[in-house]
Length: 205
Image 1 (cartoon, helix red, strand yellow):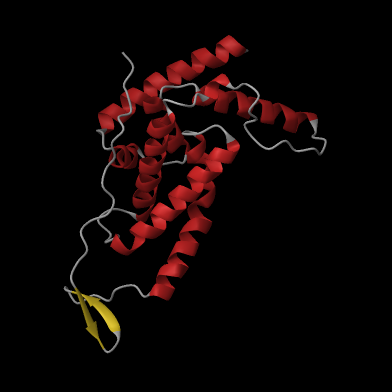
Image 2 (image 1 turned 180 degrees about the vertical axis):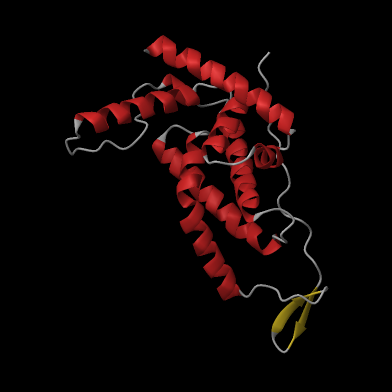
């Protein structure tokens, strides 16, 4: 029986710490300085520059339709902005960001599931069409990439999540923390996903 990705997510926003104000500077109760609004803006900008492309790739794992996928990316960005003031360093920044993306993507998938079946639409392009002529080698690579991404899209969501995160070079420990499962479960899902992908690619070759 295939595992299901349940429509639930791990919390990313801890309860706020008490605030004090000294000479116009916000301090938390343990005496550390709270990040200023300007610094928060800078940090958010840096995060989006650093993780923006990855957010788009992860969104592909939850939504194939390009226009709707862009909306999901914007939802993820908004969720990151809202959660940043509550980040206390209990995990790495990377894990924190990917967990938010996972939560938003899972919420989106659960919300869309009853009314939308993107895999039934074979005419949806995986990437914007580049009108410029491509060398043969590049065309082959593009075709192989699209075959792989199409096969990933057809995996059960529980397997798809693990694959997309592994492709972002996250460790099994990081993936387990993001998805709220054990490292053993990550390994099991990855092995089953590899087997399914191999079978899918062989069928289409």
